[in-house]
Image (cartoon, rainbow, N blue to C red; front, side, top):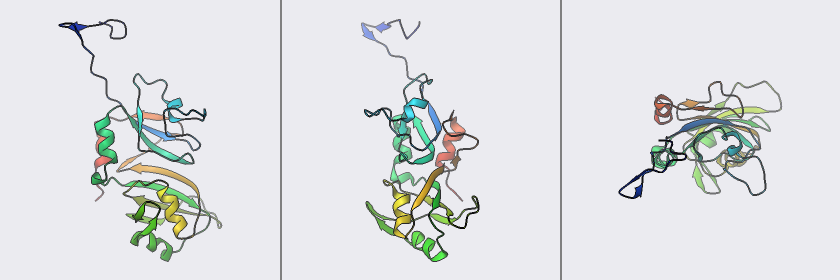
Length: 199
């Protein structure tokens, strides 16, 4: 039976084969929309997924100007679980700022700040060793929520603009060697890393 051209029925009712469930980790470049179509014709994550055998959709989102780890799937239950606040899945970002925050600034983020959408705090935040510039500071920040533009708003609140933002992990799942614009399939081990709690 070729499901693409044969119609199979049982007692007159068509039988649909179960859809293969796919779990994709994608290194989203900046200036790409986290959506499957854009009426204005801008680049979307769908442009990178054309070779897949089934249609997938993004789990959550990354802003147009944010790059890094994005999950895509055709499994709605999995997507709901990843995004549900109850799961408290930490998301790790590297942020390049237009200056160098001091320990007092970072402590404010640990204690919590109010941004559009409510009060949020960093699970972890510290200086990151990325490049060495006198002008810019790199900070690693881990958050539990995923409010719209949350990381950018948090740094704004302590007086810094984010020049570059990259999500490097969801739970314990990292980008590994994936280059910008590349994707890989997740197996059960990779999926488990998303839900594995930090010690």
